[in-house]
Length: 80
Image (cartoon, rainbow, N blue to C red; front, side, top):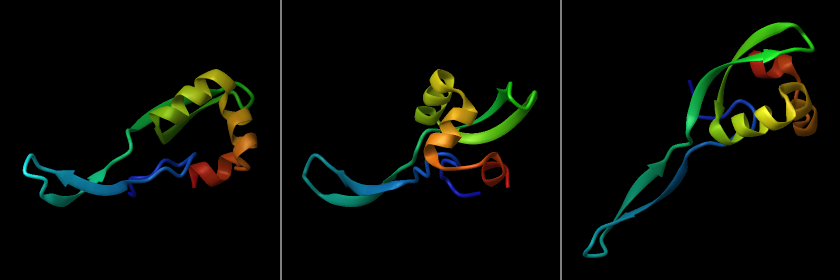
């Protein structure tokens, strides 16, 4: 399973870890992904999605169906 948000598409970032002596080595910054069970009142069912905490905050504010509509996605694309 990819470390990628199913809704926003946010994935890992690459950068450098810099030591005190200013030596640089590669590192990855992984997104904060959570597995959540979200209730969709329009469909009267629960949906389990792996999403970032930023997307979770937006869903809490707007609702899942409204968020998907704004992103141009459908529920079938997310669950498949």
